[in-house]
Amino acid sequence: MKKRFSVILALSLVILMLLVACGGGSGSSSSSGGAASSSGGGASSGGGGATSGGSGTAASDTVVEMVIANQSRTGYFCADTHNLIAELLEEQSGGRFSVKVFEAGSFGGPDHERMNMLLLNTIQMTCVPAAILSAMSHQLAPWNIYDLPYLFEDHPEVYAFFEGEIGQELNQLAVDAVGVMVVDAHNMGVCAISSNTPIRVPADIEGLKIRVGQLALPVESVRMWGAVPSTIDFAESYTALQQGAVDGTATSLILWEFSRWYEVQDYVVMNNYAHMPHFQYLNKGWYDALPDDLRVIFDDVIAQVSPVSRQWCQDFEDFCIEWLGTEMEMYFPTPAEMELWRAPARDMWRTTGAESVGGIDFLNRAIGFMGFDPV
Image 1 (cartoon, one colour):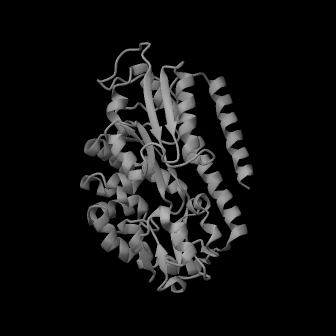
Image 2 (cartoon, helix red, strand yellow):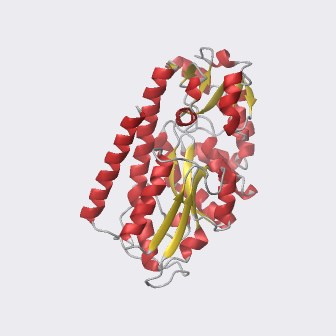
Image 3 (cartoon, helix red, strand yellow):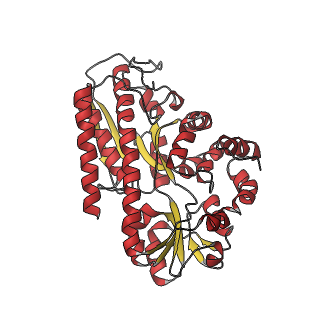
């Protein structure tokens, strides 16, 4: 199964390279994914002309070094996305970009450490979830909105929010608060709940100890169904599940495949409570210092890679659902059962949700954008 997904990735890459070769090298293209948008702090989205942000310089033969770090590995879309960005930047700049990609936490370690290195410009790009950025400053609390349970129906809704008015405001907030540009978004896959006993409705997990991330919204998402949240470190989760220290886990299907948790869990309920978007973060000072022509090339590469990366994410999620369905008993709730999973969410939005995102006013703006009534 994994081999088949690698073939899908390879074919996608071949198609992209052919499009690049036929469509011209460094001319700016429009970003279907909202990739390097102006809300990121000075990038020009599409159109073709270079935009001088005031800090850039004229074209030269200077080689610009770039370091990208992630916690993924080749064969998974985050690492593959970074490798593709590096390849296209070097190719389309004629070698004036020199990019090094460090995978699997080999440089920078866990997510929060890599974000700190990004702020220091030790690395220039990384990919982590919204909650890691929000922890960098109290001003960034609104970024927690991406983890609000049942706010988004599917991945396209996440992207529409990211590219819409509120998403662009959040991107600018990241620039203003910590000097970080957000150049793209992609999803780590739909979130569901596993255990070693069958789960169909919330009553089935009452009293179970469920491993979640060490953040308020994931913790309260599990608690609102009557389970007992356990914030065991990600690296220790396999052993905790194997030894029965926790009864199950609530997270993305992709992480189950990545971490092989399916070896120590028998059941999964596809209650689709969140979508775990990850974002491509860039040091703004580094970007602003690029020569103008290289900035145009950078914007264009992000625009080219965005739809490919998002498709890889969707393909890999589809693969994980198929693969995990052969390793675990996977249950898809009926519409009536899904309403039982969703029912407690609005009360949680009003309390922990509002507190986590910086207040009820922003919460109501965000949920209103997604078509919900105020809480």
